[in-house]
Image 1: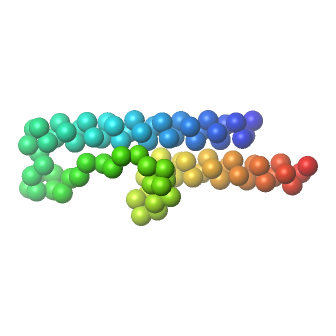
Image 2: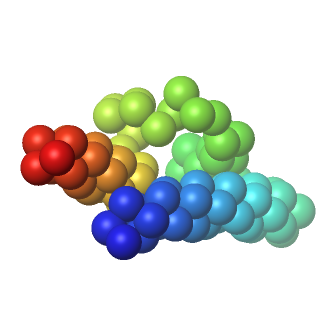
Image 3: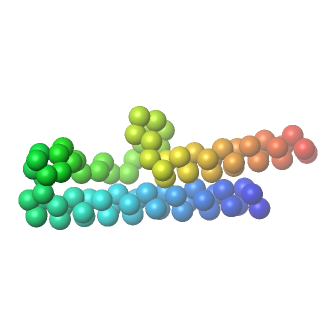
Length: 87
């Protein structure tokens, strides 16, 4: 059950991150149309980068979904190792 839950957690986290990036891009476009991307208003606001699998292990830009994904991965691996050790 723990392995299944970790797999679902990984799937949901990746989906959440993709939707989050899409929404941030939409918000960024609206801010741009409103003329809010001036240095005196919002500073150096940049559009988010698209989802990349390699970005999961980019620890310089650790986001909450990345942390959650790594924790689900750790639970998955530790449970598999425990099951192998017990058998």
